[in-house]
Image (cartoon, rainbow, N blue to C red; front, top):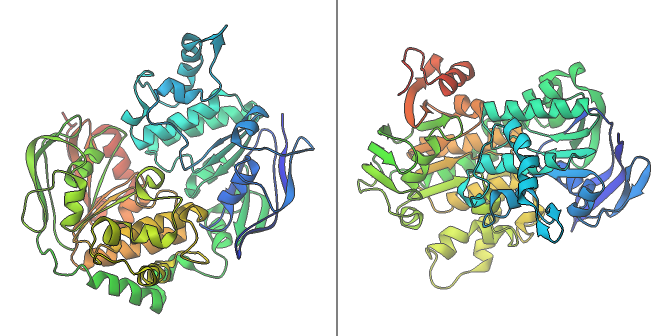
Length: 517
């Protein structure tokens, strides 16, 4: 049993005060939600609790004793495990080695992989995983890698488990298995800190909730059931009403419209996919995305929907069929060629594919348009690039003190906005979005959806692959559901709702369709 708490925690980055005297306490046998908008201070507090960063002031206590973790590995030795939304895995190592980093089981001088496998398999199976433990981790999808990260923490049998957006890349059935596993941990008197933007998960799982706003605690250890979703959202947002910011704030709306005009009429045709067969993915796919349309792709893990998006982007090999871009030419052989023809590929896997975390915000925004494609000439004007980045900070609502700060200093949601800004800077004529709002709070998600919708209305065909049912129903005109490699349903209008989506994803049946072959 363990009581884990932070007292008077303060942390600043330059002139930005991330935490302003925060107190936080989680009890053994409870699942405690830590909530707040992007930039509220959640990730900073998690890093301090788990030894990834040191506070400027305050202390962390475990069972009444002050602890100073030098890093997350040392925290783990004291029974404090963390699963971060920014995965800390090793793609070139095999799956089994990733489950035991720097703590391999040994028999004498030799690594005992048999014992490691024996201990790992029950945990993996409880999360619905049955991977080849000898295969490179890089062979797994983002969702599978996130489950591996979770399994790695559970194998240690921690006293305290800190989960930072653990289900952000998971589809519904995988999330349900994780939540069931956490209920078992609660019964074992493990103290669980649960950071999530999916508020229904918080209602279903958590006992208590603490809400941060602008680096301060605005609600401490309140019973979840006494608040409800609407009460939590109101507490998170305060009087700013950011859920309506894109529609109601004139300055933000003007920025959206200006960016949308950049993609109007550059590429006037639809995106067309005919008879597409993706190697190791979806089969016999036919679809058309017209200018101004936002079309969603979804399904359970491995259903094939993501392979379609990757094939269109030039990231996956195809066995048959064709892709025709809005410019009337065949689809690209690789992503770089697609980008040169107006493709923007926005990924939710920002650490591995989306950002240069050690570089400044303005360098990340300029990475494709000015550096990768060289569209601003041979000589780069740093003041001009900084000003362009500042324009995006203003129009998209990125919360940052200066565009010179490293992008790693931003919260996860604000990092994702930088990913979006980087691609908007290319003036795209086709948008491909892969879990674009992964790890983004409800207010920032509404802002990003408003931006995507405005760009689509400006003429850019838009294809969205997402694990977020609310995103699919709220953003898309139509959603194509995949099951066992085949498209099994096309939903729109009144048929496009969370219940119908879940049923189609899990059964292979649309509202009036037979089971997919």
